[in-house]
Image (cartoon, rainbow, N blue to C red; front, top):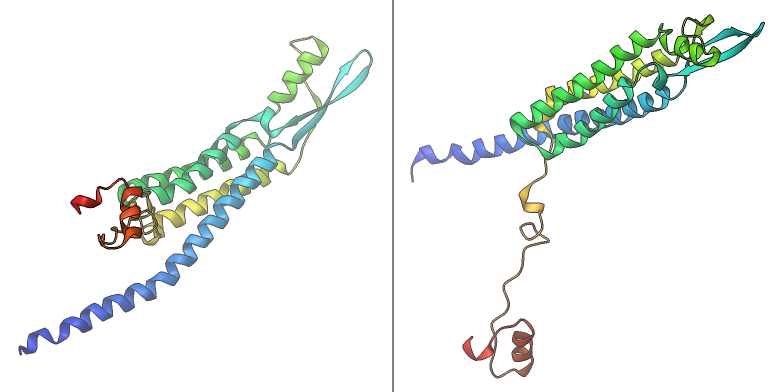
Length: 219
């Protein structure tokens, strides 16, 4: 017996121990990314539908109140939140370079949603357009303009998406992926067991072979 063959099982065992030790970290980062991504997308979609700005426009000696939602100001946060949510799901459908690219898309979606929300926090164009429509005067402008905190809530949701993307970029290689062994016909559930041999002296075996479309006389 050669002494060189003794350390090999220890090397394999050490590799298994390292993989088991790294698994909890991968699971924690995966859970954190899923939570941050889902929460961030939900916050962006919810906050974008709220009132971002208020004002008034003079008409007929009086004033008419005007409001604008996040969707009126900019549609980018909503669109990017949907893209980011799709990218978060797609992370598990791809591997290696594909996973890195999808994680990058998730990161960019979060950064873009946050930036668009911050840029729209002080916007008055949406209310000016409403003022022009309300007064039928293209030169009309909104007065007493005020802004709410919802644009900043939207930006916070974008930051959560951004953090989820960064986690995917950093730890995504250790996360599980869809495997071909779970596809129909190739996985543990889809694998077919080979039929038991047919005993010509047992009528029930002959009937089972006929049900399978086999010719029992040739088996």
